[in-house]
Length: 213
Image (cartoon, rainbow, N blue to C red; front, side):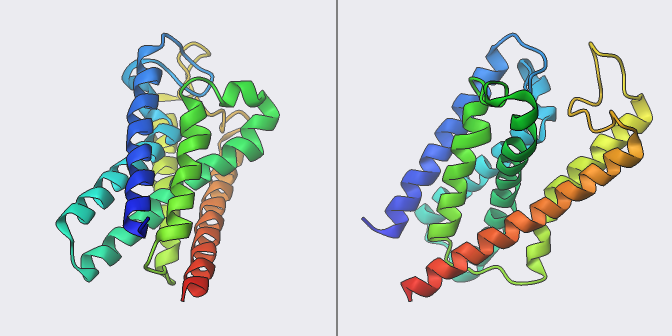
């Protein structure tokens, strides 16, 4: 089986599972517990990052159909790096931070089993094993863009609308529980983790490419 065939299967699975997980999340009547019903679930970084990576999978399959040139392939590889780093960050934060606090049952609910575990693992495997364009500095810093943008919008929402009450909290991740300064430190740490994830993905992919040569 060719690499293109393997990537087509992997990315096809990512697309299908992204749509399936979002439909499950949108249809179920629930608020809190790392997901919500309806369009409200879009506010979570988990959902945004997975949908972003699902879109990259669509672009990858389209590029295979169109037989795009080398330069466009490099650009798509950068977007793939950024999106895969984002879902890799989701995976890391969930299992290193939220799972110990809330338990695996809370973070691996019906839809989040795919968003927190399956899709990130498939995406990271696709990138590490099959990406053909090594990412170099300073492009590696782009791994921080999704959490930076999300953190800025999250903070802006808190400053404009306040934290809110328990029933309608604007601090759905609880980062402002210990005050905004601590919340900013948490976001800074998360951006650092995103950079770490990006570096590790790039390093692992580089090792695979070296062995392939």
